[in-house]
Image (tube, rainbow, N blue to C red):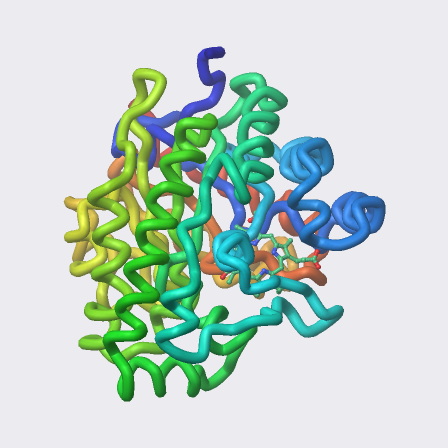
Length: 356
Ligand code: CP3
């Protein structure tokens, strides 16, 4: 395997010295890039794009051709697992993801199987292998999955949701059914992420987009417990290097200590928490990833620069342990030039924090 030319992202996650604060952006391959929209059109639809090795590789690399990002993220989706479990994923224009056969009861949970990462999900592993090859050691490749709880919200609600009434009804009225589902999902996520690592992912991230809609007790029981099980079972070293694990619960700022206690290497932060406070609470245990509000990219360049400076100063002079990112995915109507300015500002303004 080729040596990594830029390993600042992996080094920061492991709290090893870095040259500057590395940065990547959640949803960095996506609709804010005209070249993404063109490739997606060629592919036909979003899932066809994910299933096409060559085009999935192409869209993964698009943001890296434009910007000096410090990591690539596999182009795929968190909903590949429920799709492979037979729920029938489809995307209705402008309405987000939907399932033809949502989970409604215990019999539905009993029916779902454990997708084979090199079977139904082989298209994802093929994309990982192809992207790794195309990257040629320039930057590390991030693999990812949804958390069991977040996947379950889509599977039980049948798509995106605002109030999560169906899954919360299951959680309170029929908790054993939900636990059965979450346990199956955790096992599937474990083999899916370990297969991504074997295929060449050099770090993995678990997206718990909807953990923050739970009460503290329910979060521990229905989301964190299963992410903990995943962290415990992941391959943590491959190709002679550590494979860092990042957990991201959106709106999970109240629970940083419990997230850090799972044994993950890094915790992702959204913008509702001050990074200085987050670091004081868990900075000795884990690296931190984040945490600029993605809407800040609508602001003029001077304002973006000011916000980058504030976040860097908030994290402070520790030399490492910080991966810059947005607190959630980049919005589709952001001007790519502003994203480029943001990335450059992080590199430029962070250098003084890393002088040896
Ligand atoms: O660049 C990257 O970050 C890698 C690719 C990636 C996608 N989805 C591509 C995608 C990643 C890491 C995801 C994760 C994902 N998918 C999450 C967790 C992160 C988060 O944003 O909270 C969630 C909740 C999903 C589920 C999902 N997929 C939704 C709700 C939607 C529709 C909303 C939307 O943004 O359109 C998707 C579709 C999706 N996944 C798109 C992309 C680029 C847009 C599809 C299109 O081209 O129309």
